[in-house]
Structure formats: structure tokens, C-alpha cells
Image 1 (tube, one colour):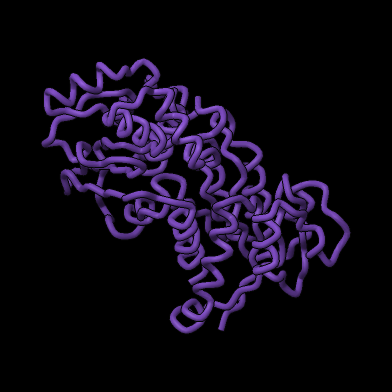
Image 2 (tube, helix red, strand yellow):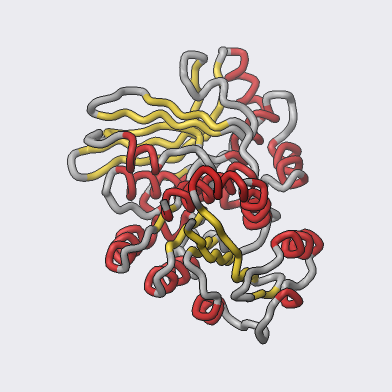
Length: 341
């Protein structure tokens, strides 16, 4: 029976959902996969840090995280000041890195993951930034240290996209893809079909925690663009930065636009697309009207969809309905199992 020491950087909704999922799946992990674990460290910029080589009480950590209290009380060592110090002292075999995404540089998550790999840890993340800005570097670093760098939850939460191409589609060459990859804008456009204004729909998305106080990353297309860049970089082996994706958000879509499309039997969607052109790609994120024959048409609310076109398979579509922190946490758990098996 293999025992794995786990550490978390980031303990927000996703981190706590992962901790709860690990507790829920503890017996199954042991009986089905021969995996035992303890969590030896948790680091949060907002809520402090805790390290205990004998294992932290995850239930208490979840309670403290939900209440906004400091994690320091759980620690068996003096308070940790920086994430770098935390990585050095947490004595982990696997690091889950879930700090906030940085669209422009991928930092500090990129540095966290690199340090973890160099320290002999598997590195698993839901953060899109390091995938876009450091995929080759981090992949080479993982190979050099015989570790794994996995990131299934970086796009479409727990839906198996990266692992699908990594293991289930050998020899398939991706020619392009099209989809809806941003939940917030899809929810806004869906609610505008019921008569709400953009401002009303955005306020609702913020009230349920789907949209940030500053929603520009979603409504101006940056989140979608970084996901296009991640899929292109990893699945097509063509490095692409978010700034290189032709990008247009949804702020200019008005209720009359929505109603006219509806009258014509169509819907507005923020469509992400990529098409291989020799050794380069053409990519875009832009609002488009889609017809009822499109696989994007019936994808409503916070759901997502992507259709892949390959040289051996055409129009392979994956749909994820109503994701939550729990589905993101599942992608992280799946990566953990695949990394250590």
C-alpha cells in the first residue's frame, strides 16, 4: 500500500472541495487503487499556512477555511511566510497548486510548480496560467525529475480533455476545435434571453459567485482566450499566448440583439475557435449567432462544450453540464490518481 503526502497551495472553494472529496473517497482510494494519503501542508495567502509531517486534520482545516479563520493553529511548526518556504518545508510527494490565475505571466503558480517538481513532487493544478506560459518548461522539468505535471481541471473543470488526448487518442492529430469555454458569459447570455439586461444578468452571476467583482476577465474574453491558448499549446503542440488570440467580449450585445436572434431561431454565444493552418493556427474568441443545428445551441447557463476535429475522427463533442468547485476538484483528484498509479 503506497502512502502519499499531499500539500495544497490555495485553499479557497476548489481547494476545500478537493479536501472534502479526498475524505469522501478515502476508502475507495485505498481499496480500489492501493492509495493512502495524508495532507502534510496547506498554504493560503488569505488564511495562513499549516504544516505537520504527521498529517493535518482535514476536517478542521475545511472548517477553518469556510469560516475565514487562520490555518496557523493547525501547524506544528512556526508560521510560514512565503509559498517558496512552504514548498521547501511541507515534506510532500504531491503538490496541488490552485492559486489565482495570472493571464499575463502565469506567476506565481509557474514558479511554485517548477520548485515542486525540482523538489521531487508531482505537481497538479487547475490553474491555466502555468499551462499557457510554462507548458514546455514544466513538462521538461517533470520528465527530468521523473515526476508528473498534470492539469486536467485547467479547461472545462473535471471533463477529461487533456487526459483524453494523452492516453485514449494515440496517433490522432487535432486539426481544430470550437466551443463555449467560459461559464460566466454563457450564463449572462442565457439570462438575457429571458429579458434581463447585460447589467442585471452580470449582477446575478456575481451574486452566486460565478463572476468576480471585476468581471473583465470573463466578459471581455480573457478567460476564454487563455483556455484557447492552453488547448492549442498542449493538444496541438503550437505555443500560443492569450494576447495572440483574436478576442472580443460580450459587453456590446444588447437585449434587442438577443431578441432578434431568438426570433430568427438562433442564439448568441461567446464562441472559442481554433483552426490549424500548416505549422500555425488561427484562433478567435468572439460572440456569434449559432443555429439550432449547432452543438453549441442547447448549451445553456454555466455549462460548457467543445467539439474537436481530428484527422481520424471528426466532430467529437464533449459537454459539461453546470460545473462547480466539486467538478474542478474531481479533475484534480483524477490527476492525482493518474500521477501516482
